[in-house]
Image 1 (cartoon, helix red, strand yellow):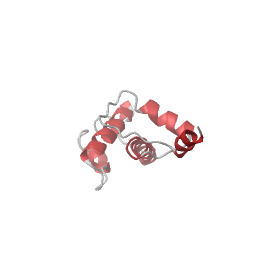
Image 2 (cartoon, helix red, strand yellow):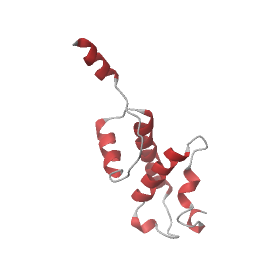
Image 3 (cartoon, one colour):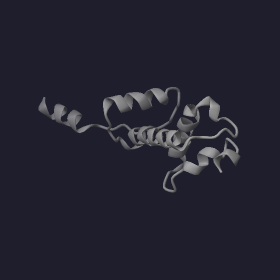
Image 4 (cartoon, one colour):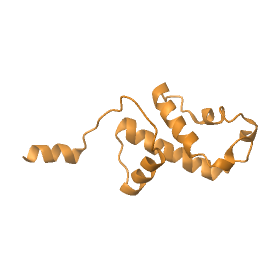
Length: 105
């Protein structure tokens, strides 16, 4: 099924119904930038590798747009994978540790 789809249509299969346009554009770019080169056109796409890429795209989007936190190693990996993706109006989040440190002074 996936091999028959046009490359531009392929990522659309993975858009969440609750994902707004801004979030989807960013996550779609993350997915497309990190597809292995041998996946172009109709090449077969191993399900496990797609699942991993989709999971990493969600980690990145959740961190970026929702302020979710993950292990340092995982965040380092997705931030590196997202290098060069420009997203406007990214929310700024304050962590609990930052709030506690501010109130200690």
